[in-house]
Image: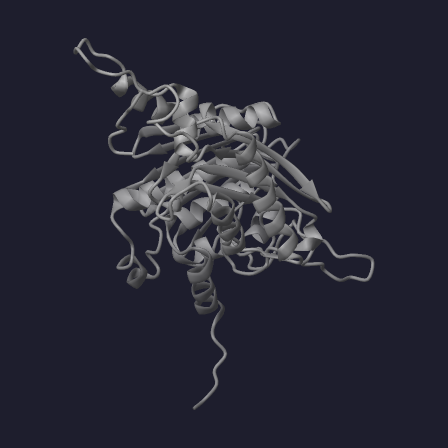
Length: 394
């Protein structure tokens, strides 16, 4: 069997399969580029589930003509710098992106147009890439004083076999919306907007950095019920800090899709953190129910490895036992301190169903405190006051 050196175009398309799995992956990479560029406003438009068109606009620092060419060259990035010895430290990543693969990968399988004005520059420039073929920068119009405009058309047209594995336009659009929500939850000080086929799906103004702004952003995305029934979490151990909000046990769902986890501002799907979350709620929820949470872990960059997979959705901790113990201990402490509370949306609905409705002989239901105690296994409806109640469906 003869060994062959693959041409760059084929190499790029192979690599693109790891970085850009679906339209939502392209949106994620482009939004993270904007965040790394210091953007305070990010607007996204998609058509045809993102397969026909994706447009990401930001007000970040922008790119010069020379930087436009480098931006579409594989493994060229502004997010890694060598130390005094000329080495690049991949265990000290302070940005969301760092691999230099997103734009080249997208350009190798789609029609990509980059338009940007660098901060302080008088002119804007544009560059096109079609199926890996890179054009030359040319002057272009740009509405803002600085920033970038990235347009992706006909995603996967250069690899048509990949289109067979895409889901429906509705499913792909939903995946994009979920990705945008995760990014917005991680960066409350940035304004986000999303339009799908001309319809506004998200309109999130920038919030004040900090717990209050974060809770306002979470409320806008997860609903007012979450803000009304969430427990603040803030614990630190050996330089690792856990903050965020955990929903009361009575505010639960049938799937784990409402558990949002972030590490150093990066949305992640980490088995260690998910397992710690289940362990913390094990004494409060049935096995088939899942809490609603938004938890943020801040850890030294050298204590976590984000270079595990090109999608950067997985991480590895240097001290996993410390992280797990912090998550379990912090959540259990918050839950134990709120044992008297139950989610208002559930308790009020149950209590209103038990209140007298003008029917003779109907006995009033438990008080809110008694209801919470019953949920925690500490109230006997046949003892004490002599009242009895049937809680249907609980």
